[in-house]
Amino acid sequence: MKSPASILAAGLLAALLQFNFSAPADGQIIVKPGEKIAFMGDSITFQGWEVAGGYVQLVTAGLQSLGVKIVPIPAGVGGNTSANMLARLDSDVLSKKPDWMTLSCGVNDVWHGRDGVALDPYEKNITSIVDQAQAAGIKVVILTATPIGEDLNNSANKLLAPYNDFLRKFAADRHLPLADENQAFQDAIKADPPAPGTRLLTHDDGVHPDSSGHIVMAKTLLAALGATPDQLAKLENEWLDTPGSANIGATLAFHVGDLLTVRQYRAIKAMANAQKATVDVLCVNLFYQAMLDTAKVHNSDPTSPRESQFENEMQGAFRARVAALVK
Image 1: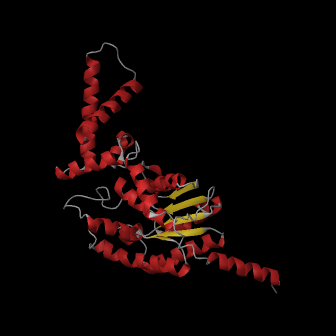
Image 2: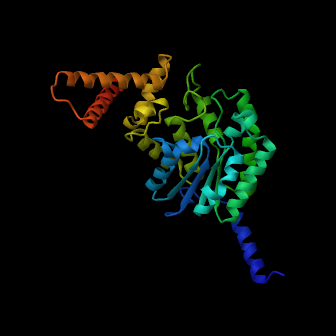
Image 3: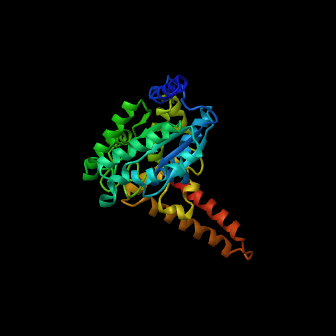
């Protein structure tokens, strides 16, 4: 028979796990300085930490700007479904003993078709992930899955809709903070519909966010953590002009994203859309021209530069071409 003390402790734990974290006071960040946040997710979350201007990086920096320095635990793995996340929950999250876990899951469960996860087992997987996290004393924030393609009425998004409906209801029933990323993307796309063949918030696959998409994700998650609209507007303005904050796809191999601000990236993207080209193609062309500019300088200079010096000069030439292009 359980003792009265153990029964009381179990009751207190259950009450704490059901405490309503979903409605923070205005301007009151619900995460505390020094707390650890595990960011569980798929390739979008992986890129959110690994890629310049990713949403995990922005959230971490944004919280610090608001006086809350956290310890981030990146836990995004490309291609993951809810089944994959459930399988690695202990090794990638529970064993690291975070105070919080954000859960972003659903795109691959639908996008991967036969290799994905149907709605019923998806619901069971999500429930198990959250149950285990809460049993370990971890507070959970739910993220809805971002759209699969910017055509909001395509077949994939119709299939995804009930997954996100489940997440919204699940978060409400469990009194969990909800970052409705899908709705935020929908609102942005409806407000400024991209022209045919172009993208507003994603790379060419229409799924993985670019700089603008990651900013939308970061703002939505920070709002769920208690940031106010004024705070978010100030943070976004800072992000737009942070050097090296642009999130670019294929050109990452050229480290182009490390050389651009988001504001510059957006200007280049607008030009690429007008030319019916991709940002990647336009940036690679600019980078190639910068390389030729640098080579021409040294063809007339008998002193051969070191590789590092040549690369620095080439990056400077690229920045100069971008500045001239987007001024």
